[in-house]
Image 1 (cartoon, rainbow, N blue to C red):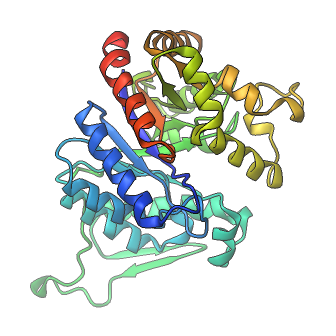
Image 2 (cartoon, rainbow, N blue to C red):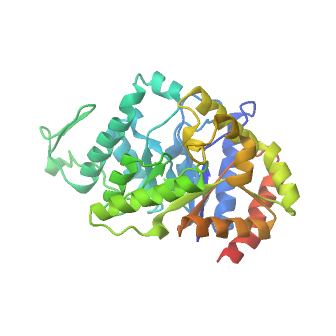
Length: 355
């Protein structure tokens, strides 16, 4: 089993942004030192809690502070970016990284982000799909380009001049392109099924139930098989909130009251004000009142001493089936020493026991 870290981020809005970013960069360095294979960074434009507005810039700095760990935006919210711009800066970043770039494409869900870019929420999924098609065409073929779309039009044909080097769009270092991932939240997702057919790799959300996780893999496998692909469970990324302490009682107590518990309550409240709580429920019979912090701490969060955390992860893998990468969720360092201790206990005691 491999291990990754996902910086959403969720930060204390009263903390200076520069401090938040410095702590996230320190986390990236620590993750590489402790044997993590991947590091993901989210994109948000109008949130005081989720305050990284361009993950590619963060990643560029973190790449210079590390040597081996792979990094990527998760997701890059394509509905906000012209496909040529997104394709070019990701290709550029892949070269800067010497091939350490991962990519996750998806829609953003912050309503104020959607508003400030002048978009309609119902169009975001279609914009993402159109952008992916154009980006992959740019990366895997040469001009002339004539790519008409509903949201964008890409044309490069009238001013080509090979002798003067005009008209070539930068290709990524990794051929044909860096590994492409997609986020998974909802059950029976048609988007996930189509993504599987294209060979994109799934990352399941950290707040969904085990039953939903099982459904994610069923849908992904069905989509892959329909396209003549073999679905490899070792390419499945499963996210979870994890906290390790010297004793299980201490870990559960701290996780309830620290930034982990506060993050879950924040997301629950955002969801209540938006699409509703159904996506987080154990099943359709679960009442809204029962979809609360107690439920997550009992059934979704992994917290305990190293032996208990090891047991819970192995039990998760037994219940949902094999997956290749466990994606940890980063939380604000409300207590830096506690979070670093949790990370070190996991790396030094849990990771060897799992493997």
